[in-house]
Amino acid sequence: KNTDQIYAVKQFNKALLIEHDFVIRALEQKEIMEKCDHAFLIELEYILNTEEDLFFVMPFINGGNLHQLL
Image (cartoon, one colour):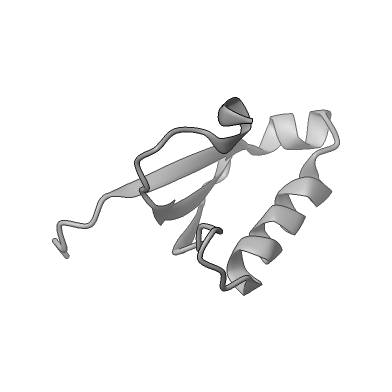
């Protein structure tokens, strides 16, 4: 379905999440993005799952990485 909406996709490799013990962090990030409704937080639109990867799909907002700006 073409909506002309641009999305940002964050990819997690499942093997690396497990290897570096980041599974809990990824799940917490998912929960926060799903539940929070705030003007300064990005909402999670979709979650896609394959055997090897996990993808978080969210609206694209041009402006860069907040971590780099700080």
